[in-house]
Length: 74
Image 1 (tube, rainbow, N blue to C red):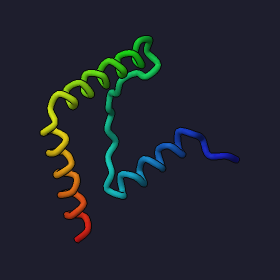
Image 2 (cartoon, rainbow, N blue to C red; image 1 turned 180 degrees about the vertical axis):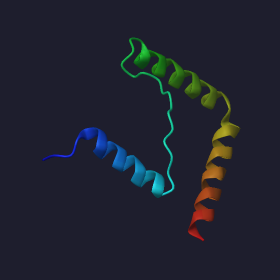
Image 3 (cartoon, one colour; image 1 turned 30 degrees about the horizontal axis):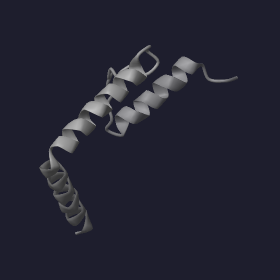
């Protein structure tokens, strides 16, 4: 006879806890909500405009990326 779903889920959760994990609940944007894609486009345009207006930002971000690459190579 198959194990009830409730028992399988409980065993899985117990195993995860035994592995040092804990459950958390997070709230994320609902990508199915009307207007979500348009809001993403607006925010992307705003970020692009700010980036274009501040050339020093690109230099800073490139330097930070190189610094990260150097740290992970060691």
